[in-house]
Image 1: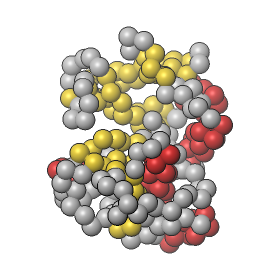
Image 2: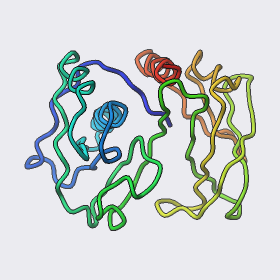
Image 3: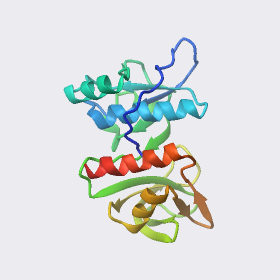
Amino acid sequence: MNETSRFTPFPPQPDLTVREMPLYVFGHKNPDSDSICSALVVADWLNHLGKPAVAFRLGDLTPETRYILAAAGVQAPALLTDDLRDRKVWLVDFTDIEQGPASLPDSDVVGIIFSCRRKATSVGFLTNLAEGKPGSGSVRFRSGKAQGRYAAKLIPSEIADGLEATGQIPLADPVLAAFEKTGLISQVEDRAYPQDARTPAERADIRRFFGFCRG
C-alpha cells in the first residue's frame, strides 16, 4: 500500500528477451528522484514476489537522481519507448493520466502505489471497496488499537470488482503513527483485511517511507 524509498542495492533489471510480458513499472513524465526510486523499488518487490517486472523512466534523470543511483550502485531504469497497448503496467508516484505516455489509456493498469512528497502533511491512499456507490464515501483503516474513518472519493474500478477509493490521511494521524511503529495496517469493511509488514526489512521500509515523507 505504500511507496517505499529505500536506497539499497537492487539486482540488475531483468532481460526483456528472457521474460515475456513483464509488468512495466514507471512514474510520471519528467521524473524526479521520487518517481525513479519508487519504480525501482516496486519492480524489485514484484520480482521478489515472483511477478516479472521491469522499471522504466519517462524522461531524463536529474542530477540528484544520478547521484542517488551512483551512490547506491543501482542501474538506472531504461527510457520507456514501447507502445503500451494491452501491456500490463504498474504506476508509481502518479496522480493523473496526463502524467503518462500517450498510449497509457490503452494499457492494462494492474496496480498503483501510494506516494508522498518530501515535507508532506498527508499521505494519499487508493484502495478497493467491495460495496458502495460512486461519489463521496469513506474508508476505515486500523493499526493495532488505533483506527479511523477517512473521507474518500469513490469511482467504479477499472481493474477490479467494486469501487476505487482515493483520499488523504494527515501524516500526524494516530493510525499512521501506529503503522510506522508496528508495521501493522488493516482496511476494515465487513471484516479486517490486513496488509501487515511480514519481515523486519519490510518494517524498516515503512519507517523509511515515513521519514521520506517528513523530509
